[in-house]
Image 1 (cartoon, rainbow, N blue to C red):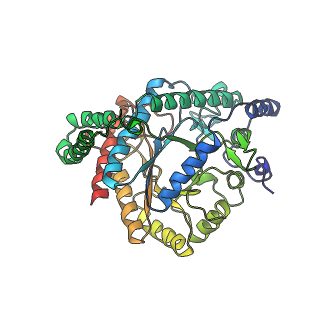
Image 2 (cartoon, rainbow, N blue to C red; image 1 turned 180 degrees about the vertical axis):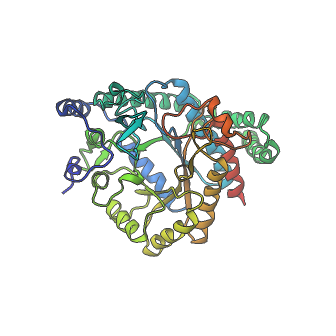
Image 3 (cartoon, helix red, strand yellow; image 1 turned 135 degrees about the vertical axis):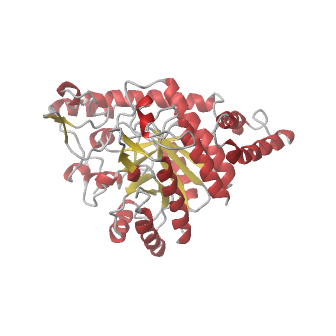
Length: 444
């Protein structure tokens, strides 16, 4: 018998140890009275779109911050992430000749799993930073002590972010012609301009032809709007439980904190609390699939989370690393294919390619990220399985956190603008370069 609190009977990993249980219960009670952040009909719409991806009729583009921040939050940061995802989408849509389902890691991506409960510096041990929804990153006890009130702040910032996103969508920010002009601006000074210019030119020719035929934003308002959905790793279960809502007509429960939520590599245990919570909500859900996953474990996990075998319900997010993907992914994909399981396969090329640079910064190589994506496409196609999407940690800002790319960011360059509180992100130029690279691959 499932209910939103049945996860409490299971082992819940990666949860903070709050000092005041009464304060936690008070925050949970307040969250239960707050309006849903997303509505169930929006959730159902995304599930339908992902069903098209599962059938090979669309492509999933999912991306955004490693972890959203309370202190760095602004309308400009939301706009820049939204804009760069739209820029990627138009390139991938044209190249792949398929609709692109756009899902941001935004309006809720505040929690981060950690490899250890405590962090030690110079002989001092404090609780690990687990994301702004739990504690703060400054290395002192007051900052690192988990505070349940942060759940309220996360809810409020998520609501504000969603308001901004809806305003951008309704205010012409998503106009197809405008977005393509941004891509042309990206190409102006890019060292690889000649390589990508043909793709940009053919998109421009298509838009110009549409204009001549009378198909423009004024005659077809749909060209100035888009669908955009939110997602995050649903790590902090008390928060997610408090925002679970029941549809009074169907009696189904859905998670109102985001349109899509996923389970991370560290919390996907079959008998664990996260799988228990996820199996009962009606949202489209994801699961990170790392190199230690076995075929038998994956089949049991898929059956637990999608017992009805419904297309669009479950997305498997491969995060193998460029050195491991060829050893593991084909066997997993072939097993699910042979078992007739309907899933979306998406590629997270970020987490398996994280290294520590000689400069001391944690970083990722653009070349290794691109290599894993290309292998993902080739390996799945070799198994007659549709490569359905990509999942990126990225920002619309011009940070220096990942090495490589057309501008050849080096280890020495990382210190210039290294801003992430957790994992390194691709910057705006690297993300768009990646889109054009994938576009070439899709066209071929």
